[in-house]
Structures are given as structure tokens and as C-alpha cells.
Image 1 (tube, rainbow, N blue to C red):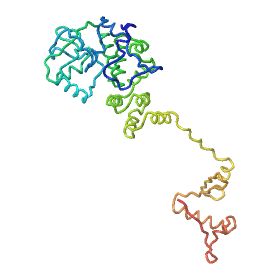
Image 2 (image 1 turned 120 degrees about the vertical axis):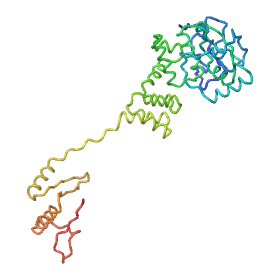
Image 3 (image 1 turned 45 degrees about the vertical axis):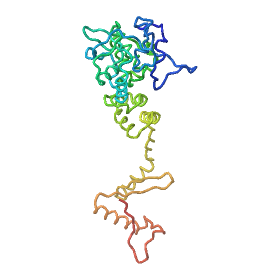
Image 4 (image 1 turned 90 degrees about the horizontal axis):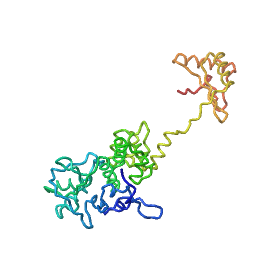
Length: 341
């Protein structure tokens, strides 16, 4: 278990992180809790052990180990390595060699890499046969904690890899979320929100791993049935986090549709009377302006002819007046009407 002492052991890395976390007074906050104490050596500089390209005095190696005798730790949360950065390290190693020993532990006749897997990969690509190492005795929990904090310090983990690292600490070593927050120097809410990303569909998690979606985008999609479809929409339209949050809010709380008003009872009675007296199917639709429509419905051409005959008879008897604006010419005695499909 990590101790509370020696917080400054992890305060500064030679590699400048992409986004430094600062306190209210502007000073960079320390991440991690006493990894120097964890390693059981107050003189051991863990910052340098984690640094691929040190600028300060290099720590002496305990030994030089054959490349093939080393293997990556199964507790390493980082799965993806930036190819461009790796190639740059390869060129540096070809020119200057491995300046900083790898941090390892002995496992039988092999050595498991605790810190420095990127150096090991680059050394293999550079054609080296052996690399310098510092050997430390550590248990599984300590190795996982070091690997997780190392990557968090560098900000090399994707949000999904970070969540998986947290989950392993919980599942395999019974850490609480509060304990995790103390170990990695993050808030408890950060740990909780990061763990929630593991509930996303696998396809969306892949998008986060590949950098197509940010952690902010992903958090907005947690718990949505159509998370995958929205994720694709985010990428296609290049939406920012605020736009995604607004989109999700509208989906969760759609604007209520105005309920359909029931037809006035008087209108219903008029429809019934007209249907009965005229023998026609009639629908009356009042408008808000006070007017409306009276629709005569027919099911066939024969029924349409019947409607025209009925209306013509009613007009001749004076029951249906002809509007002055639409009155037919004097020589035309037939009833005129407009048929609307």
C-alpha cells in the first residue's frame, strides 16, 4: 500500500505533461502518494526511472539485461503507444543509447518491466541486444499502482485505459474509489465518472481509445441506448462537448407536444344532424380564426355524383345559397363547387 510520505517524489517529471493540474495558488499539484517510499529507497529517484529521455544525472543501473529476458508487465494499463513518439525515441537511442535504466522486478530467470516499456520497445527497434536495468522487489499491487500512476503522470492513458486501470485496482486489490483518488491525486468524482465510461458499448470505447472521442464526449453518452449512433454523429459533425450535452439533454427531456384538443360537442352534434339530414358523411373542422372547413367525404365516383346531385337539389330549393362572389353566369344553371382531394 502506498504511504502518505514523500509526496514530492512525484511532483515533477522531465517530460512536460500536456495539461498540468494546478492548485488555486497556481502551483503544479503533485500526483500519486509516496512511490519513493513504496520502493523502499528514499534515495531512489522514481521521476528519473519513469523518464525515457532524462536531462539530469542518470541513475546507475544494477545490471545490464538481455532484451529477450525482459517482458511487459501484465499490470501495465497502457495498451497503445504513439508510433511517432516511439520512432523519435528509437532515433535517440540509436544516437545516445539508453540513458535511463528500466525499472524491473525479477520473475524466475526473466525480468518483468515495471517502468520503461517504451524504452524497451524502442531499444528492440533500434537493434540493441541488452539494456540497463534497476531491479526492485515489488508485489503485484505495488507494480500496478506504479504503472497506473506513471501513466497518469505522463497523461499517456486514454480515458478508457485509465478506467480499466482503476477497475483492476478495485477488482484485484479491493481498493475503494476514495482510496484510488488519494493514490492518483485525483478527486473522487473524477474516479467515479471515469469508471462509468466502462458501461459504454465496446464500439464507443474503441472510439475513445483511438482519440476520436474525448472523455467529455464519452461521459455525455453514458447510459444512453443510442450511444453508438450519437457517437458517430459527434464524429461526423465534429461536435464539441457542450453541443453534445445539449443534444443529449433534448433527447432526455423532449419538448412536450401540445395535446390534441377534443372536438367541441356542439360541432359533433351538427355533424350528426347533417349526416342524418343530407345522407352524407360530413366532417367539420373549425379554425382558430373563427372560420373553418366543411368536408364532404365520398368513397367512389358514383358516390361523388350522388353528392353533386344532392347539393344541386338543395341549392334549387334554397337550402344552399350560392355566394355572390362565386355566383355562376346567368346562362349556367348548374351548381358550381370546388373538389379538394
